[in-house]
Amino acid sequence: MHIPDGYLSPSTCASLYALSAAGWYSALRRTKRVFRTRTIPLISVFAAFSFVVMMFNIPLPGGTTGHALGVTVATIVLGPWASTLAISLALTIQALLFGDGGITTLGANCFNMAIVGSFVAYGVYRLVASGAQVSSKRRITAAGIAGYISINVCAFLTAIEFGIQPAFFHDASGAPLYAPYPLRVAIPAMMIGHLTLAGLAEAVISAGMVSYLLRSDSRLLLAPGAATWNLAADTGQSRTGWSRPLWWAVGLLLLLTPLGILAAGTAWGEWSAKDLANGGTRAQISAASRNHEPPAFIPSGLQKMASLWTAPFPGYAPGFIRSPFLGYLLSGMFAVGFLVMTSLIAISVGRKWRRREASS
Amino acid sequence: MSSPSFIQKTVLGFMRALSDALVSEKFAHRSGFLQSLDPRVRLTGALLLVVAAVACRKIQGVAVVFSLATLIALLSSLDLWSLAKRVWIPVLIFTGLIALPAIFTTPGAALWMSPALRTAISEQGTYSAAMLILRVETAATLTTTLVLCTPWTHILKALRWLFLPAEIVTMLTMTHRYAFLLMETAKQMFESRESRTVGVLSGPDRRRMVGQTAGVLFSKSMELSQDVYLAMVSRGFQGDVCLLQDFRLSWRDYAALFLFLAGGLVVAWIGR
Image (cartoon, rainbow over all chains, first blue to last red; front, side, top):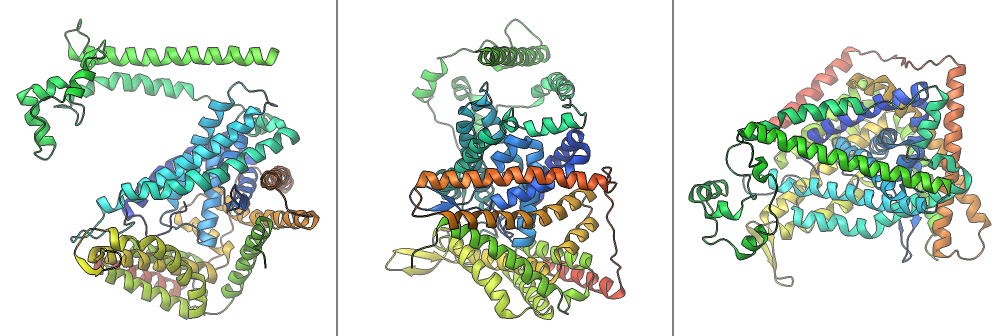
């Protein structure tokens, strides 16, 4: 999964460097806020540990061996931000010292494995281990599943990066200038190996390490990043508040929702049966589809499925409001309110469940 | 002779990494073109040429950078066999295997029809595969030459010149140092386990063993990070990083930097 130099175009490399730089900046800021003076030794030693774990040959069913990334364990113990930094450092050392992965593609490799890998592992582990006691065996399963899924998501992203190269970067004769395989080849080629061997290797090392930690020092598994919070408590630091800026961002986005009215025409591929029957919209569809005429008759399946569900606010315009501006705003407020309420109910149910499990 | 067990494979991997690091130290202390330059100029020059090779859209441009990279390696006391053994042959095998199907699957004008496979080798596919292999060979030659001719600590210090924050440079330096320490520790753990193992372990036992070894190594790492932190604090560390910068640029470095820049631009123009 370590992309060498020459497989990705300069613009792909630059875009992924920019995305990774944003991730590294946030990770460094958040980690420093929590660990303060401990940041450098802790992240460095953990990056060194991840580097060494990547070199382990892991025995897999069928007599073969594979290598793991160690991103899931890093995330479970340190949390996703610190793990992002530790895995990025390990990948940098691999690229610079051992030529495993390129220098121009370092941003892509860190984005796929360190940033996305850490956050996917974090999300899956939290989801599966939610409410489990510290000594619960469910944590081992959660770590295994998180490892398997995160490594496959990383592989999928890598495949997409490879697969878009021939479409965008080719010479006048059509010869691809970088990775030569389109998505239909790149995705199965990457995923077969990861769904079978590499995913299993990551699952084995993640589950095996969590199983060991359950017996030796289960405090580290209190929550993803528990070690982070324990050390932060030692230095008198607390978890940083993130909710206020988030609420401001949600509010701002909500106010900006009427901008959607400015977009003319229908979104490509989101046509309704009514759009296909309307002469004006048909002309728009044809123009947007490189002059391919839409079918003369409405496909029977589309017509049948279209009547299955009638939205309460069709086209983000509730029937009882005349102003499209207000209609958009109200639809946005309704959706945000619905999502917030559902999340609050889910959190409250989760807390009750955890409390009940702790008291039993 | 039976194939090596996963423990032996892991130990061999560690030994290879440790010996590679020692070989780098050997080349870095020889006299040669790159060794005579300031590490910041070496790093910037190598990066400029890698970017030029990646940005080239014509194979002639990449071929020019490849020739330049080989010339720099030869002038820096590296021999062709070392380059072939460390870079060219492994890259040819790895990237060649990946690129090979592209000569059949890429649509385009038929170059040659294989009667046995009943499929044609396309001109565009061949060009694309050759371009990919040459590009990867060029980038790998440049980075390997840089790493072999520059002590690792100098490369990391030089990164500071490329606006990398001092904290990141410090973390990279420490990661490098402790990676070798932990690698040695892990090697010893695997060796001691191998020497105590009688008979053949079952699959689940082998997997459990690897998980436990990683877990023990993790506990050691946590302890190590705490010890390192206390050692740093006892020496007056308060969180601010200050790197000593003892590099000095001479006229020779400025001239080399100009040549690298000019070379990169010329190549980018040829391969535009």
